[in-house]
Image (cartoon, rainbow, N blue to C red):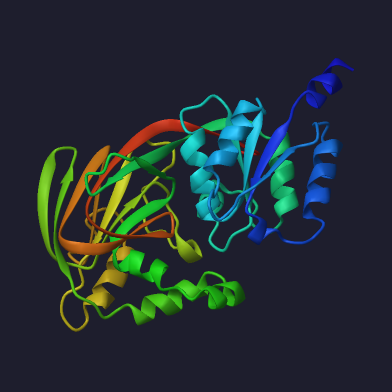
Length: 310
């Protein structure tokens, strides 16, 4: 009886993107899921165009809930995590987006939102790293969980056709990537843990916290969300068949895979470009940048899930 009472004292908050709700019965079914698990009725907070998750997450924390569940795509997850990182309250994931990249890397069910919610309620707490980013020497620090990038990868995110994404999912990014293959390269100065290198004719610099990106491709094969490190990948195709070299390097083994796809790792990195390039955090296209400072925050975010990070 005491165990049942303890469970009933628990309450979740659901920060949900209403544009991603899978069906008209989802809220009702989720409330029933909580009831069946012995939890109180959840605090239901919908994001808006003006507030994509930060305000709702603060409201949830002020209410003293036991877990804040981000229900939406990667953008919603990032907005919730930005407030949750460094707190003592756990965050849960109910994937409703196209990529669902953090969920996939953590081994969370991306096919059944209600089952993912069930796993949050029945799960235990674990901690993962996050990466903090400062763009163009700004005062505002932004957080990401999976990957950031300047150049080609960000251009893909910025030019993906929404209607196509709704129809074919992550394959829409492949279509955008093919269209964006032609483009001008830049010169980049990369400093990792104080060690500086210069790279010419670069198309993209990516910073990763997780192993897999779109389509399950292991872009950062050595990355772990619990290793206290960030991983970099520099794409520098040269010549007519340069992109073939990039593909060979990306799918190769180990660091410094070849001159077209170079890997670095550390706890902090500074990326300086000789002219503005498009910029993205966890798939959100955020404009252009010439400078990016990134620092890993080890085990800064508590995740409630069934199992352990993969």
